[in-house]
Amino acid sequence: MPTDLVTVMAQSEIWRSLSTDSYSMALRRIHRVAAGIEAEFEKARCSTGSVIDPVLLATPISELSGSTQLVPAVSQLPAPPSPSITRTIGDVYDRFIADPKHQWSKRTQIAHATTRKWVVEVFGEETALIDITREGCRDFVALLREMPRSAHQRFPDMKIKEAIAAAKAKGESRLISTANLNAYVNRFGGVINWAMNEGYLDRNPLKGLKLPDPMRKRDKRNPFSTEQLRRIFNAPIYTGCRDDANGYAVPGDQRPRRARFWVPLIALFSGLRLNEICQLEVSDIRVIEDIPCFRVASGLSQTGDEKRVKTNASERIVPVHDELIRCGFLAFAGSQRLCGETNLFPELPIGHLGYRSTAMSRWFARFLENADAAAPLTCFHSFRHNFRDGLREAKVDRDVALLLGGWTTDGKGTAVADSYGSGYAPATLANALNCVRYSNLDCAHLYI
Image (cartoon, rainbow, N blue to C red; front, side, top):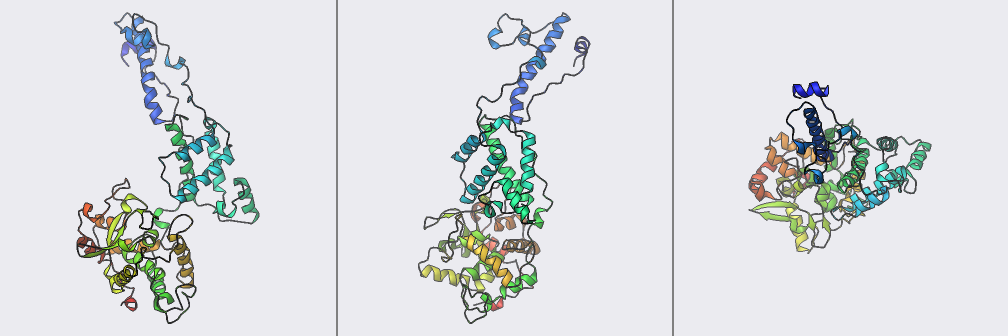
């Protein structure tokens, strides 16, 4: 501040609160506060006889002509008005869910419905949204920390506090994980942010209340050990079983090669996610520039079912690994085509959430137990960890590795949808993919 103004105003700094924790709202209010401070400066200059700008002393625009009325100090200005529209929590939540911009899967719809149920139970459906306090949000998070795991399934007709009490009465010690707790907080926070954008609220009382997750992301799933892989691919379904239905774990003379045989092998040697494999159509096995490939894509299938991928980067072309070809995968795909099948694995039903992977996921968990291959932090997704480690061991270029696995490449969830836009020819991708080897795993007994 200029020395003359410091003398007149008897202060060297001016502090003003913008009265909001919203960045966008602060940007809007700062202009008004700055104008008020400029008016104070002009008032001080006027008292010293200095040259002033009368426009800076004026208040409303309608009074600028010829008026020298002083603007009151910012601290004396009336408090910013509250949002002009006051709505209840239940009303805002319903408007948020009904917003046509939201293109949610059935699973996400159910997750939002569950979160809404808990939010309105804790805060009250008729409570005004602007009455949600920071302390109330802390109490909500504290309740979530006591929630038993899968409470919405195990206690579907109970309120949140009743479910907590029932779990405690049963001596239930399995509580909701930090990751799932934060997912509920994120969904509720999404509603709050949406309400701010709609002008129903000017701050987010949930901001910063997510809990730190004590488990590192990379520790949430482990790759299968070599011994686990041996037990998996030497189980009766791979060496001879009674059948691949209820007799998959019983040794026998049958060697059926359908979904339960192929899905784990494809995951290990191609890195595809479980649902990416289960929703494959026969037409997704195609030859591109003389290279047999999997095409992973979203959209409607030929039968009118929805095909989903996790991110934009998940849409990709992945060559068929030589090991799968030795095991007869191309012959299997060709036979499905000759039989007139549309889906590569037609025996896999669509689950209640719209995913073909639902039944396969449950079966594989039982399969691991029967094969004596179950271990903490391992599940079907562990195959992707094995595949990523295989790419590292083979020293495959990072960009190629991310493309093959469908991992996000630029931090924005975007990547090319196929091999052509990536700049890598199918032959280049195939050469990199076939460098992936599991040296201590022998699959020769599966070769055709």
